[in-house]
Structure formats: C-alpha cells, structure tokens
Amino acid sequence: MENDDILVRQFFNEHTEEIADHGFSKRVMRHLPDRAVRLNRIWTAICIVAGIAFFIAVKGWNVIAEALAVCFRTAPAQDVFHLSPLTIALSLLAITAVGAYQMVSRELRWL
Amino acid sequence: MAASTDLSLVTQVAVFHNKRAFDQLVRKYQSPVRRFFLNQTLGDTQLSDDLAQDTFIKAYTHITSFKGMSGFSTWLFRIAYNVFYDYKRAQHITDDIDVSAAAHRSASTTDGSLRLDLYEALNILRPDERTCITLQLIDGLSIDKIVEITGITQNTVKSHLARGKQKLATYLKANGYDGK
Image (tube, rainbow over all chains, first blue to last red; front, side):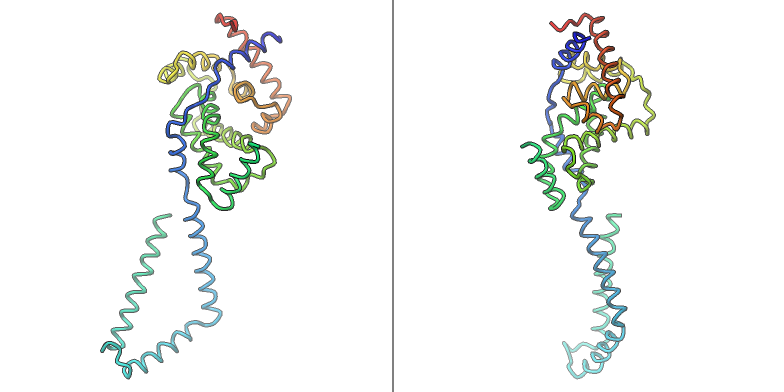
C-alpha cells in the first residue's frame, strides 16, 4: 500500500511541469470587463436621478419659465449678435438635443 | 510572504481597480489553473485555456467577495472547480472521455509522449477521483484545501484519494512502470 503510494507520487512528480504563458495572460487582460466604465455609468445614473429629484423638489420648471421670460423680455433691448430671441432659443434647443442624443447613443452601446 | 503579496495585489484590484495588479496575479497563477483544466479535460488545450480565461474573468468581477479567509490560490481553484463543473453540466459531458481523443489532442502538444502517459493514466479515474488526485499530487494541496475547493466532505476526499491511488498503481504496474 505504501509502495503503491510512493509509485504514484513518483509518477506524478515526473509528469508535473510548468505551463509557459505564451500570451495567455495578455488574452485574459484584453477580455476583462471595464470596471471603470461600469462605475462611471452607475455614477451617471445616480447623478441623473438626483438631479431629476432636485428639479422636482424645487419646482425647477417655475425657475426655468421665469428665466426664459426675463430673457425674452430683455433680449430685444440687448440686441445680442443682431439675432432674434427665437433664433437663440432654437439654437439652444438644437444644442441640447444633440447633447442628449450623444449621451443616449453612448449608453446604448454598452447595453 | 507570498500570501501577503497576493493580499496586497487583491486589495489594489478591489479598491483601486488596478489592472496591472491583476495582471501580476494572472501571470503568477496561469500555470496551475491551466494545468488543473488540462488534467480535468485530459489534455484539451483549447478548452482548458477557454475555461481558465473564464476563471480569471470571474475572479476579477467577483474580487470583492474574496475575504482573505483562505489563500488566494485556494479561492481561485474553487472558482476553477465551479467553472469546470458548470461547463460539464452545461455540456452533459459523460464521465468517460475517449482515450483516443485525449491521445490525439495530447499529440499536438509540445511534449506529446510525456502528456500522453499522464492523461491516459488520469483517464482511468472517475472525475471526482481525478480532481482530488491531481489537486494533491500535482498541485501539492492538503486534504483540508481540497475539501475547501471541492466542497466534498473530508472522508469522501480521503476515499477518492485512496481509491484513485490504488487504481493508478495497478494501472502503472500493468503498463510496466516501476518508477526506475
């Protein structure tokens, strides 16, 4: 029984060898999920939710309406770049839409 | 010393998401993990590398669940063991892997004759016996560590080891191996 144990151990000692890496570690590292991106997305989601909650809590639509009203009242007098208030409003709307589209399309890539 | 180094690297991965630290862990443990899978699959190099890669990715994504109660290598082997048995369950692999197929796969490795003998010998064992035998005799793990990795009771592990060694000794003698 003891001799059998020695025999088997000797066989395995003779057959135990280190396996060369041959690029295996690099392949593993290339396939690791990007934790930083995931964390970034989680933080983005938390900030958006917090922002929306804050907006609702302070009735942000009232603040925006008031600010816009002031802008439309005073803009003709300021004559900014000789542009009409409507042109400025449309430009701001377009920039906001492009920004929102960029953010959504970037997030959808990770789904 | 090695354990404290592992713990330091694991901390860097878990807290700072330091990929370079994880790369060091992969380089350190790629050989035992890939060898573990080669022994369980009887020399299927491609499958072993795929399962080993899966093991390291799981280790990376679940690194925060490593509590340091056991060594990092034991924790990693436990993941490897689960990955292999999940794969087996998914593929419905039968207990008996064809010897000729194993031999064919082995022949494509760098040291065909050496591997052929090892995998032919391992092929006579049942999967649980093979796992216990290789963890003890190739990876040098104690019975307690094997229990921790496999989740099998200590008495069953001892029984697998005794039966596996007996089968192997009979096989080796029948094939003219006398250790000289």
